[in-house]
Length: 205
Image (cartoon, rainbow, N blue to C red):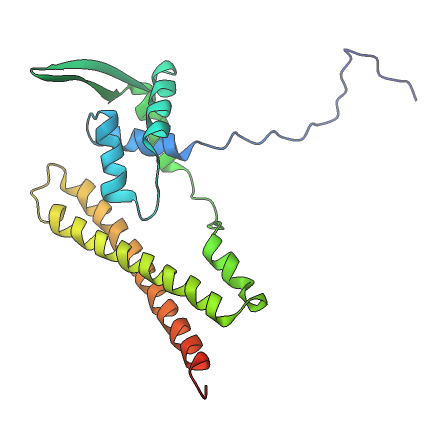
């Protein structure tokens, strides 16, 4: 068989290259800017106020992403002077940014195999004491209760305000309902597990 010299090609098909994984944080920022122009602070506040229970991002991540996205032409910014206060840098979605947002919204959602450190640790709690497992469960319960309380505060604060874009708000509240139902189911299961372990640890249990 004749050796193939460097630079020569063959007719053998090559394995298709996988498309680069889309940066979800970038897509979220594009979505927020698609609703209205925002500063970096506005974007961070939107994360904390409406998405903290299912997606989180630090301020440094947001500002770094905005800087990169501006160099890529996905967003543009302008300085808005303020009397007696620091100037604001306001970001807008560009035509290219809108095109990428539309592409992301049309893509199928990947299978939901997510990392969950709490469940992973609970899986191995048969190798420790029931008391230790109970502490993990109780901390998890407290976190879930705090998330539900925060979601209720958000609903009371923003759910009844007049909406400039009612259809946008409709889907945002639908996401909230999905997440609330998921957290409530998680909380119910956690409460049952706590009760079962407490019963076993009780004198005579």
